[in-house]
Image 1: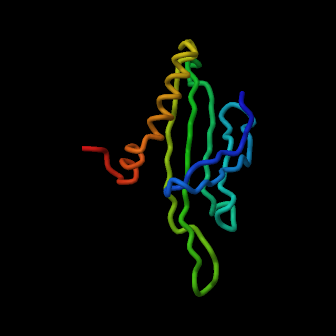
Image 2: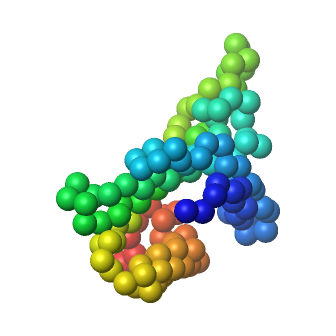
Length: 133
């Protein structure tokens, strides 16, 4: 198992780096590791957050990895001065692979999925909110 590290990624502008700092390591199967962009907001709920958990499938034949990402929009009330979350966008996906699958195939599955998600066209599709036609 890999240890929890910080993750540096590019913002939408393609040049500015943001850091998702490892906040909570997973304590075992089914409990998430948590990363947050701690440079955003004044409260924990204001921060963009990535969670990753992994566990065996119900019948024990597969590993299931779940990723969730939330990106809140915060605003400050001009009358009260209180900052709160007004919108929360997000993303959730599950990766699964049979335990008996060759490691080389599992590695290829993960690499190709991650590379597809990092493709510029995929970013355009997702930002539009529509599947390509």
